[in-house]
Length: 375
Image (cartoon, rainbow, N blue to C red; front, top):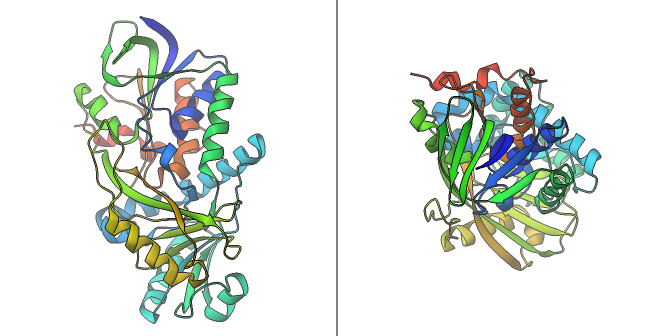
């Protein structure tokens, strides 16, 4: 059996940042990751802070939890800004996010939403078309206004993921490509039974996104993690300089531009799930619908070619993150971001690492405790 101080199950951005925080304090850390490339490694790099209209439409029963978490999202974007300073060159741009309206009703929806978000400390304002033309003159003529959330931004996830993994390696974090089949708790440790042997440790951080619920179910707790397969595209370089993260008040879309000039288009169009052992597959209807909507909103990108399209997994729970020790066993620490997990990932990873070190997280995560799922 291979031993470590702490095992981290899940090698995406959440697990990697947790491992970094532990290794910096001298802990022996091993990351166990199945490498299905459907989570952080398939992300499009949006830094979400304001409530997404898509989520509000699809999961109305979870909106209250997301709304209560808004300060956590703002803080998570701040953590990414710090990582950009520490690592350098993540192509992080934080000039805000625009949620577009094409009708008076949509703009009224954004006005109401903005008031709720401002009450939670977000920096938001409503822009009419005249004000919008000053910051986004490339928008289509049908746009009547937008909500600007100054806390939002974007980054290049390919660069960020690679730099975080390299940083963890320099700190001595071991990374093993294995699938964890179950966890066994002994009298003095906890073991992960995997596709390539048994790994033991004093404690385990579970940062396995939608797979986390199944891992802890044998311990008598039901955490309803579900995989939501979603679709993304990237174009060739070109078009205007789009500095904002772009969304819509009623339609599913995110749109942003990398430093290379390429446009990344996503925002929640469905992909086709293929089971736990394979990344999801692209749906042609999502490909066509997603890029057609993008071209309508930003006509000047209509002539660009899509050079790659792919699918990944979002994780849904109950609208809130899950962070902290399990009530049934204090050797297991949960680290599951809520919706927009890539945004929340580093902050969740840092909080989980604090628990593993026996410290209090720098941010208040009491409302995210897994105890809310205890019978």
